Image (cartoon, one colour):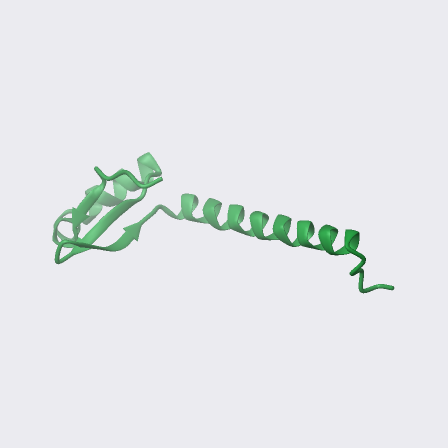
Length: 80
């Protein structure tokens, strides 16, 4: 979940990039960068991003398995 307190203007990030990167790496929490007052970019550390991708892949695989089970139960097994 994104923390509304972790929203910063892009200009702040540009001036203090190293500190922001250290903060992201130590907290593993993403930050939101704004351009002209609107959310534009989410910055996240690489480890947390990879974990997110892994979870997404697992969820997609589970959904496909559930779909296959449901189709087989409904008599739509294509191997017949």
